[in-house]
Length: 107
Image 1: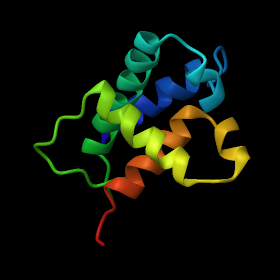
Image 2 (image 1 turned 135 degrees about the vertical axis):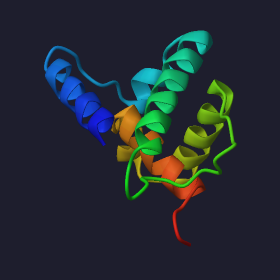
Image 3 (image 1 turned 90 degrees about the vertical axis):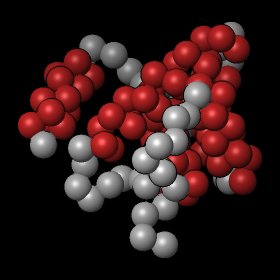
Image 4 (image 1 turned 180 degrees about the vertical axis):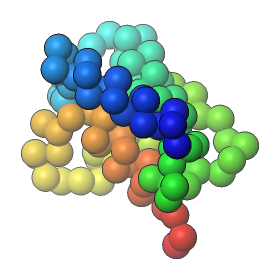
């Protein structure tokens, strides 16, 4: 619990000096940069989720996701959503929604 609080405090502290990228901005990047960026974001969510109660999403405990797995999950989520505004959403928010859809809790 303390780790989550410290992580979130740090996240909010540094969020004022940076900005999140949208899905459209992310897709314009080099393939390697896209994978590394999304992999880091997914790993960060995984670490935060490991200490969250209740869980934000419920992936199997021994499942290790690669950068390509995160890309596939995100791109499948976006392709199933026909609203053009989805592509202008922040990448992290879309990845979170995609993970929640693929790994729902209690369903």
